[in-house]
Amino acid sequence: MRKISVVLLTAAFAVGLTGCSAPDSGSGATTISFAHWGNNEENATMEAMVAAFEAEHPDIDIEAEWIQADYEQRLQTTIAGGSQATVAQIGNTMLAAFANAFRPVEVDPDLYYSANTARSMQFDGEYLAVPFVAKPKVMAVNAAVFEDAGVEPPTADRALTIDEFDELAQQVTSGTAPDKTYGSARLWFNGWLVAEGGAFYNDDATACTLDSPEALETTEDLIAAQSPDGYAPTQLDAEGQDMFDWLGIGRLAMQPDFGPWDIAKLVALDDPAIDLVPVPGDGSLLEFNGLGISASASDEEAEAAQTFVDFMSTAPAAQDLLTTSESSLGVPIIEESLAAFLDAAPDKNLQAFVDALDQSTIDPSVANDNQIRTAFDDVIYSDTALGAGDEDPATVLADFNVECQSILDSE
Image (cartoon, rainbow, N blue to C red; front, side, top):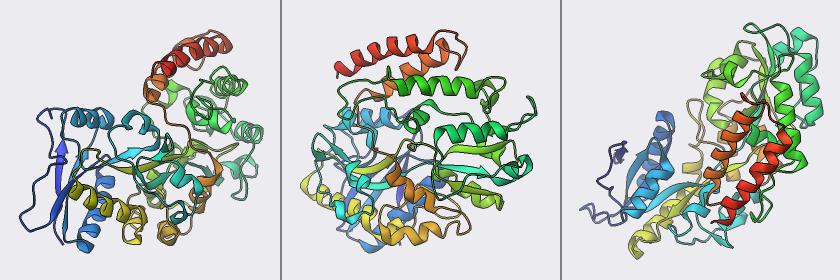
């Protein structure tokens, strides 16, 4: 099995990467490049998946380009410089911003067990990438905290309503800072807005909806949750802290935004009191990653790239590697690999991740989404009691919605 070539992209890269015009390897094989992000463990998983592909396809060599930070910015730099990778990892919310960089691909929705999978890679009526991995969120629960409080913990058979969650979280909160036991980890606005039934945009992304009743209710709920008598830590309390570590030592009863990337931590902790249940309300943000093929790839490179992305998307030899007890990129998207996923932590309810694929809907892709969300965070955490401000949340949301609409209309 060949050792893949990894190009480590640092902040000093200005020279340009080996891109779509990668030379022949000299062995008669077609060489294509593959850009992806991730930490050390996730990169190791990618290496294993690429090695599995090369073992089955000795006529195609993969040059992996591991981008450790500022992925979107650096990907844009390579595109502008004409050195775009033949294949690039792409998130479903990034499709609008990179729509011209990828060629349309064929995707068969019937290959995946969730209808949301194929749908996640559509933009403007076309598939711009082949789906690769799902990254839903679930809620981690420490039953020992509930037992100490004499309260029944949430169960895996249904999602709590928002009101039920608030009540439970308050019931198991005790003590005072810095020794306070919290009913919940700090709630993230973007995720909790979805749980409350709201969204940043309407279904076709033509209008911002941050002046909705759901957005206001989300803001008010989060402010109440982190108040001195509330059930969640403040931004300052949680800064630099790993909420899963707090869950493990009993400082938290519930972590509502537990992602698949933390499965290895769950396995290593080996605590029978901690298990997984659905996210309350309407679920959380549902993220999918896909693999896009460069619009500037040659016919030969595009053909090899299609073989590669199809393997990564639908071959059990690849999908079985997405999650192990040591590392997790996310949830497999084909039914044949679910057994391998569940075996990564057989005594935990990893099925909650699988079920979450249908619990939430896919957000529309917006080209300036990062700009909008960054601007929103600056406003909501500086002007309201979610941060250091004291302005009326209804006024702040209404004013920002006008700014959001202006950014949206400028695309």
